[in-house]
Amino acid sequence: MKKYTFNSILATILIISATAFTTKTKAGLPDLKIESAKVVCEKQRWLVFEVSNIGTEESEPTIIRIRPENNDDPTQRCIAKAVEHVPILQPGKIFKMRVPLKDSDGCKCKDPLKFELKIDYKNYVEESDENNNTFMLRL
Image 1 (cartoon, rainbow, N blue to C red):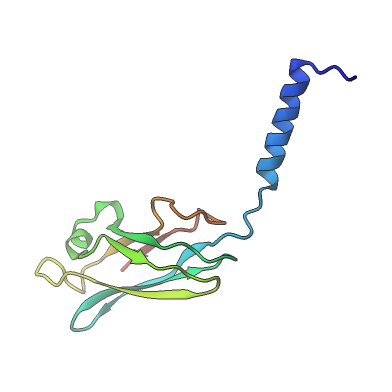
Image 2 (image 1 turned 180 degrees about the vertical axis):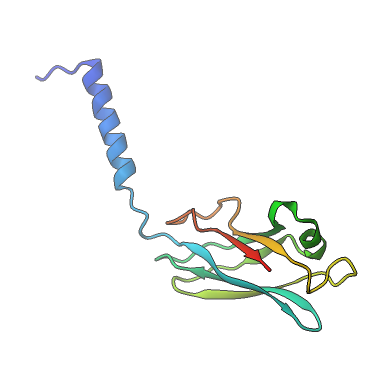
């Protein structure tokens, strides 16, 4: 019968843990990403953007956070909704969103705007790439 020491047991546990961690594949997960964004000035001003699932599995519903980059004051005055719901997305599908911007004296279409859009900002959805969830829009 083989005799095990504390160090050999600990080493085995570390090897198994490291193997489990490194072999855990990120395949088979959704991957939400903001593909494009722009401000459209019509009768109503809109922040228009697309969210896609570039992963291999359907996503769960989540939210997108819209905020000014670095608390930019002109942009803050233009944001009408700070969060918006994103539905379940199948792999390869794109969801187009239109979020109204405020129409006020303090917010003009010609003002430079700096938005930060972040999908799943509270990390509720496990994704294959958690590092591509932020989109910076500077107009």
